[in-house]
Image (cartoon, rainbow, N blue to C red; front, side):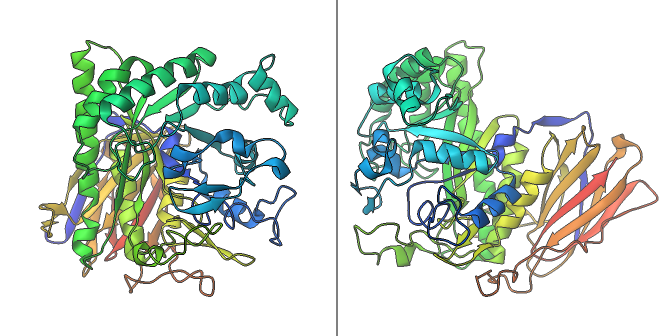
Length: 502
C-alpha cells in the first residue's frame, strides 16, 4: 500500500539495554557555553555561585545524565590547575583553540557543583595535547582520592572535603585533527593514551576511560586510526569515541534528512573495527562506543569567521536551529538507539548557546531551540530496552544516499513502568504517511499519548521574542485498532512520540 509504513516489535527480540548516558551532553569553554550560558553572576536568575537558575531549569527538563567537560579542542591546551583554588588568584590565558581569552572564573570544582545542581554527572577530559600522564594522574588524585596526599589535600584546602568520585574520563580530544593543539599520529596518541590510562587506573581502579577515535567520519585517518589506537590501548580503555556533525549547506532537505544513514554506517564501521582488534587480541572484552560529539552544525560557520580574536566569551558557534534540524536530530537519536547494544554513551554537542538546544541572551531570557524537543523526548521517555525494529517503508533516493526509508522508527520497552515508547520521523516533505505498529507479543495495551513536532515552515526557528514558534503538541491520532495493532498518520516532515501503556 502506497504511503503506508509498518513496524513489528516483539518483547523477546531486543537490541540491548539503554545506558542512560546515551542522552549525555557537553559543555566546553567555548563561546558563551560557560560565560553567559550556564554562568552569569550578574543575571537576575543567578544563584550564589553565579549559575543561571533559568538555564538550570531548562537543563533539568532534559534529564541529562552526564555532561562532558571542559572540551573539546579547548582541553588540548588547558592547564586544569588554572581553574581551581581562589578565583582571584587564577590566571587569564590566551586560549588558542578558539582564539579567545579564558578568565578561569569557572573551573573543575565549580563545574562539579553545577552538575549536582543540574542533576547530572561530570564526564571529564584530560589534556593529552600539551600535557600527559603526569598531569592526568594529578587531576584524578585531586578529584577522586579521599585525603592524605598532596593533590587530595589541596582539594580539601580548596573547600571540597569529599572526593568528587568522577567515574568517566576522556583521554584527550580529536588527537588526529591538524587543528588540535599537540596533534598526534595514531601510534603517538595510542602510546601516551595507554600510559595515561595506566596511571589513572592505578590512582582509582573504578574509573571508565574513553580513547579518542577519529575526529570525524571523513578523516583520512579513519578507520585505521581506531585500529591502531585500540591495538595500543585495548586492555586499559573501555570505550572508543566517535564525533560527527551534519548540515544542509546545499539546501537539499531530502538529502539532509537522510544523513542519519551515514551515522548508522559510521557506528557499524567503528564496531567492526573494535571487534577486529578484539579478535586479533583473542580478548573476551568488548570495547563499546562513546558518540561524545554529535549534532547539526553549519548555520554559524560564516559569522564565526568574522569574530575578532582575544575577547572573552564571544558568540561563537551559535546555530539557530530550524524545524528541519529538529527532524535530523530525531533521526540521529533513533540511530543511537538502534545500536544501544554498543553505543553506551553519547553527547549532543553542546548544551547551551554553542550549537545547543538551549539559547540565552546575556542579561536576558533563556529559551528552547527546536532541537530541544526530540532530545528531551528521547531522554525522558527512551529509557529501558530497545526492541529490534522490523520496519517496512517506502523509500527514496537522495544526492548522497539510496533506499532512504520515508519513515524511520524505533521502540523502547520500559518494563519497570509497563510502557513502550515509539519514536518515529516521517521524512516525506509532501505527504503524511500511514503507520502501523504491531506489538503482537505484549497482550493488551492502550495509547497514552501521541506527541507530534510539525511545522508548515521547515525553516521556522524559536527566538527570544517568539520562543514557541516550533513546539510539539499532543494531538497525534495514534489509536488502538480491533486487530490489536496501533494505527496512526505521521504528518509530513514530523517527529512523533507514541507512548503505549501495557
